[in-house]
Length: 188
Image (tube, rainbow, N blue to C red; front, top):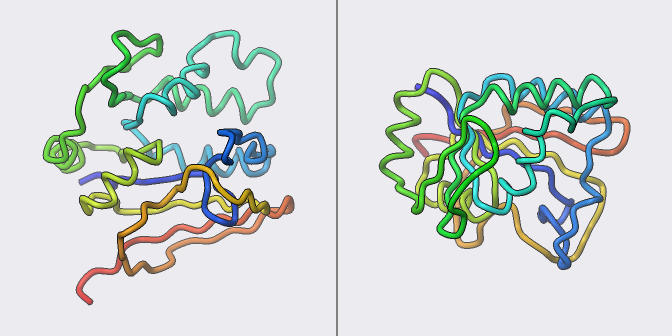
């Protein structure tokens, strides 16, 4: 059975963007990007909401990585090699390869996907992530904490959920970013 991984770059106060929707403060340097790429190698299917899809679909363009560092080209290949499911009621067509639309979030279907997949499944987007956290489907949280406090925006983790977690991995980067990976505790 595959793991469902919820991963994101966030501010120290837990936001993936600021109150204006900006996330330029979260752009990873080459060291962080290479580390992210290594975590992404296990992903076979990416689940995402419309907004994260619209940001990430740029990776599908062949010209996107021309002249870019190796870590950018590496991530682009990881993106291209994965299946993508976009949960949206507003988009009618998609430009990214290996991508399909689902109009609603079917928790049972996602649980089936997770139980039958031979590679891990990732979730991108705070709204979708919150639904899967609340449903108890997230097996691992991968947090990249940026050394910035933005004071508001879109929260990475949902309110109203209590989960006891245990730390399974950590790494500190020279630019101040800290990676923390947690899995839910089982059995009290």
